[in-house]
Image (cartoon, rainbow, N blue to C red; front, side, top):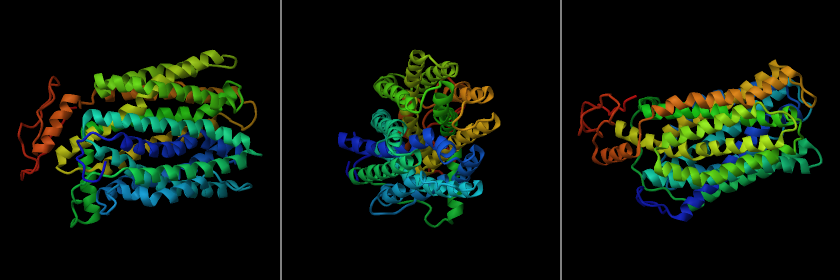
Length: 486
């Protein structure tokens, strides 16, 4: 799509493939860090689990500021390269360097020195990741505003994410094992992955063009006042809040699984570290095969219902996985397949739902605030990832985990709970929030008509709530905004 093409137009195949390439690189980094970063710190860099978890938390404290701030900033960026694409152009190379540095912890550091090394290197990486990933996600919401075309674009992006996840979780351990020692292997693999991620982002910047957009608003308003006004508008968007709360719970659960799985395979199942890539190949292979199924489900069902079905399947599989022990490879494979089928819904559905909530926010506020929404979405996502990592680190520490030896019964129990029961509970808690999510295909069509006409859509039927009257103009002096029922 060339700049100036209408956002309601069908997207060319080349645009979808080019956009999906970015997810290959970005999710490669995400997967490697979710699955392997903690065990790299504890078993290779020999950093105590509590020290590593506390150091990672530093970056997420900064995230409480930088995600919404960077989101607001991208919404108001003026550039000949586009409001969001400019960050991909200039962020690709710095992101590649920072991603490689995360895996290069010098040997022999004291606990205090290790804390500062991890905190600084990870915070720099996380900041650059936000500056690239947030505009990348926001770009998708502006490429098309068609309800079903967004699902199609998300399916392509999810396929790219799956390939990246496969590389990060399956190929990285293979590269590490091929090196003379684990420390060298992680450093070389990290450098390769950083370079690949930078190149993938550069492909998006080269291949995808943004549609023309209106000039950034609030040019004369003081910066902090404008940030607060934009933030308040996003926080009044009840469908968005319901969705982001549900996705945060799901992200917390899946992060626990991803961070604990290496420990579960090595110590609970008594496999070797070469078993992890094989199991991840099964899991991600099933996720990939399920993407077409979930695309068809979303084409026929409402998005929230499809997401709920996937979460229930995934939860059932996780509960079963947590009960597995040594000598049950067939059962483990079957359970991972069930988890993968359920997880496939998470790879498509919520990312197709976020732009719909942004359209609702546009109707409420009379202003499209894509960056702020993705900033808040990214904030919750990253906080959930960090909380999951910190919870696992605390569990390992409290249950007496000792690296590279047979574990005590308490440590094994903690690993099993963090792999199965606790993640399943997080996914189950997201279901009521998704049941309350009100945007259907018909409701979204009404939102689109309201945005185009500058009026409020009629209330959703059958919920017994009161919505503003038809035809209430967004530009009226009263400034009243439309409300979705809870």
